[in-house]
Image (cartoon, rainbow, N blue to C red; front, side, top):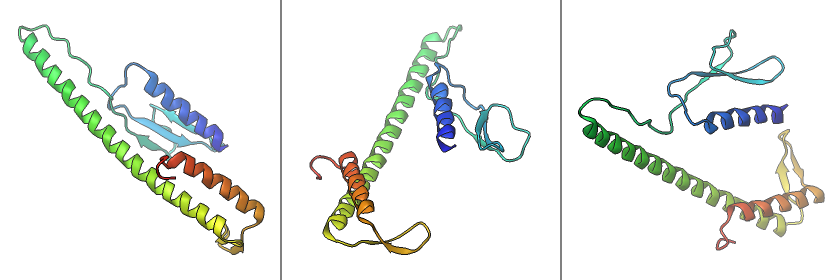
Length: 160
């Protein structure tokens, strides 16, 4: 059921971001029905169990002027576009910086996990029921494979 919901969300965002025009200030409502199906709509659902999502325009549309101040307005539009581009680049840099920090933390965690898994014969961990138990050889092999994949994914070649 989770894969179905994820697919719907992915399709929803693909449709939203693939269109040439994204409208600003449109309310989008999200809710889950009795069959655990996730729904999105511009129309408020009848039930009270929904959340409202916000949208934003990823660009500023050029304005078309017909008055005598066309060149002045063109200059203002150009300045607005430059500001929007600068804000986009700044936001993109912030996101890339956060992603790099997260990747570094994930890399370090995967390396520490691998070192622990390879250094000890018996490893005790807290299972999903909150009970301490010893990891089986099969579980240990699976964890080693997963952490090797995480090292490949998150660590730079110089970090390995």
